[in-house]
Image (cartoon, rainbow, N blue to C red; front, side):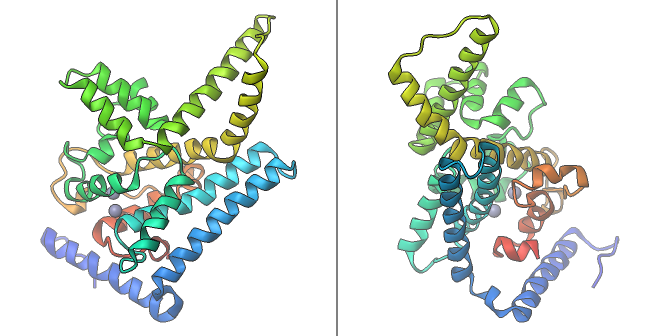
Length: 306
Ligand SMILES: [Zn+2]
Ligand SMILES: [Zn+2]
């Protein structure tokens, strides 16, 4: 089976879909446990969350330093991102809604700066339908289709305030409504995460600048106690979130094409050159494998990797 240049676009798409499905079936025949999607999804869910808790414990008792904790948690939560995407496509526990929604909640709490996954489900189905067009709110919400200005970089580092700035600077109507709708989509965990993050940055920036100027800020005892908790939260969950999220957003908003997309063949490219590896490491090789997903949505992420 090979793709010929004289075949129609539909024939090419059908051949690619067939090859992807056959490859998935091949792996399930070779390693039968791979067919037990619920078991594998739940095992990865529990192992990743336990890994985050163990990293937090080792960081808090001084066994590992902050950087190691941030890197390990970012990698573990990249698995939770893949699970969230599979859950959005109803891959795990479709017939047991209690476990399904419990997993949705879990992957949200441990990736606290992200959008509500139940809201994302609607945006993501729209993404598959309208990929590469102006209607694809999910991709546009992470900067796709926009020039690489300071605003795009801000959106890629922080979609919450970056998109609020985009709304306020743009000339579309109903700005207050749009901002309120965006904040509601991130409520509550996303709002908590972004608040903790900017408090952390603001505090350390103020302390750092005053230190450089030869002065020191007389923070109150309450502020210092609060900041010690904020510092810990940043190392354990918030900084890993922003690192992982930036890598994923950079790869995703670069690998999905924008404009002149009129077929699934033109929706994505494959980003797997060696210099993308530092980014791919924190988004579970998304750039290499997401293109496959646009052809066949019904395969879990580990089959795609294989
Ligand atoms: Zn996509
Ligand atoms: Zn999808």
